[in-house]
Length: 285
Ligand code: C5P
Image (cartoon, rainbow, N blue to C red; front, top):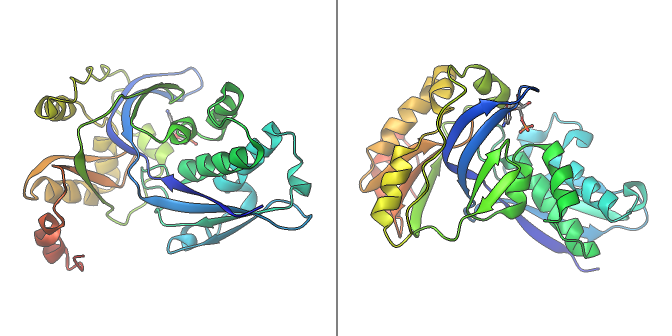
């Protein structure tokens, strides 16, 4: 078996409305998510006779250092897909490598994207459909964002994330992601919500009216943004900086934070970042 590789793309919520709450405490959402080509890189290789094992490398590996391997979502995703293939993970003879680039607790689905990429890898290896109903259902139990990350294409998701409608296409925007370096724990941000029954997102207009799409996105919100700013005021300062960048169309937080996004008319101009980087004392490039 030659090594198989998958990118665990970041999940970016362009809008996220909290529209209700289930009896078990999970919140009902209406969200528009996109999956830009940045993320972690997972590799699956043959490794003798032993159990499935995981090694973590990459610039953000330290964020997972204290985590017992059994709770790593990449490993749990791979195990889930092995079970679907009827293979005992203890005798799978497979090595999974997670090259970690995405920050943890950052609102861009890092762990969920890893789980989804691991599921895709094992499915590729054993000829399963990663979007089959049994896998999607098991994936939801790993995390509410995992089914979305299995799709990894522009989509609208409702329920707690399980009712997924792929979006035909979106206008070609430039997207900048910025993280203030503060982790925002998802349950804590949900807990701080004041209103849990907000209206859903209005339908997006046809993509050939890019301006109308931007207007529709601007009229939408991220309902978790205010509680996240209350938890970490640096998010509010970052959003103000992003909103002031030249040619920016929209600045908003993703997920439960702390990563924020700025949308630009495509192609994104890297030079647009120069004033922000200069103010923050960051290297530009
Ligand atoms: O499903 P996931 O593990 O990502 O969720 C982490 C926590 O975030 C949940 O235990 C819950 O407290 C909160 N959550 C929620 N409603 C959602 C998703 C997450 O309340 N739709």
